[in-house]
Image (cartoon, rainbow, N blue to C red; front, side, top):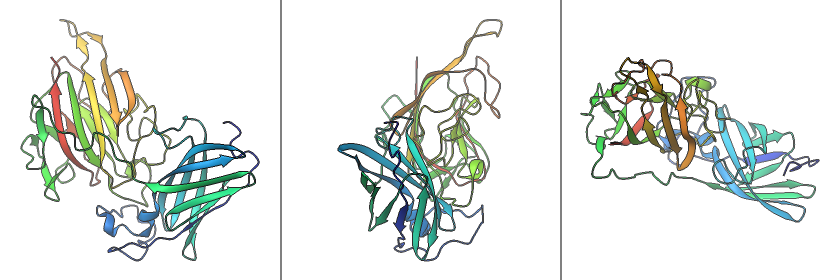
Length: 336
């Protein structure tokens, strides 16, 4: 495993794709605020961006391999190849290879330190020396996407109205958005619970870091589980799936922007004695797009921006960070 691609010089070339029913030109250059919420109008770079999966042959050995292609604006991309498969689908968490890309003469040329290939008509092939690989585009979907609320659940949002939320409004008539009126919180408060919600980040090709599709889910309005377009990144505590300044996800399961994603959260509140002294930390398990990214993790304190820890129940907050992040299918089952 550790010698994958060793000594094999590779260079990637991807064919440019056209957008059907959308913008035919690349978006204006270097505008960090340029935002797309409609995939059909997101431009050709959006169609190239995504995940690919297939096989790599190293001499006589055949292995699974995955790739993530991330748009950076102006026809530029970053590419990450994962030995064993995509994150959460076979990758060993260690062996990966990165490259950078730029569009030239209608094609996207990607140069990595030790890999090569091309994508033509959706087929991603490459190789060199004794190594050959072939990948195809895939669109992963969370196995809990669209999961129905059980009979005992408190339904916080079903697409019909935002009545369960303070300052909540609908976006595109069926989604919940905290953008227009700032952070929104549930009218009900909860102690120990299981929470399901679905979210979608916008496509912001020129934005970077915390400016790229930022929001967050505050449990009890105290502990922030990050929502961010972190597709193709390392997976830090300030990226998608992280508890800010406390816990990084075990694996970065963030899908490309404009794809619906899921959080399934099992939360147990901190405990306090009669004098108000904390006797046990809050604990949480998080499943992101069907993969466990936090398992019974202790939260040492409230995260920045969260309300102070107490023994009282608290609401669910959806953070406004200035980006059109949408939510849907939100429900809670209280634990007794």
